Length: 174
Image 1 (tube, helix red, strand yellow):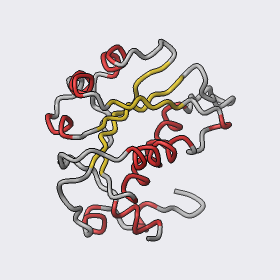
Image 2 (cartoon, rainbow, N blue to C red):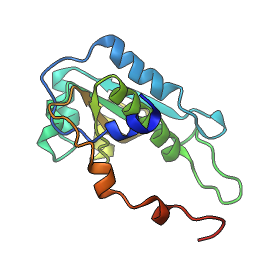
Image 3 (tube, helix red, strand yellow):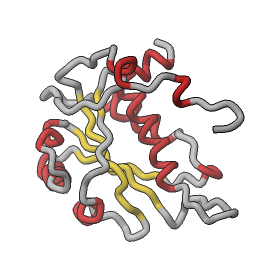
Image 4 (tube, one colour):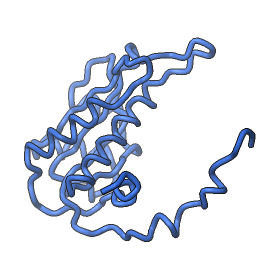
């Protein structure tokens, strides 16, 4: 499939089948995150894969939604703010941007493999970091549930819920 078809196929999955994810597919998804570009190629991104049921339950307790527990795998996307590039002009830290690029690669690779994901950012990141024993230099940024979707996406949702291209693109000035 071409890229636009893949991007439209990806959706936020909040219902998962009770089917384990094959190790080969998990590794492909993680490889997609690993090869994602980062500012100045500093690569401040780390992934903690949580598959153990007890540990998964602890990680899920940092988020209020019950549906997260259905996913067979939770990937905790983390950033190393001591390693990330900062723009010299204003000191802007690009760690969150680098992690976002990697997570986007993961979500698209998962969709291509028939797997579902969802970005979860509304969680207790500090407590999650304690649960998975992150070193002080790393911070949990997003939870990415991974598994087989229990529902199919509405392929028309992009056209119905997205602004027109003309509303989002500006030529030479705003």
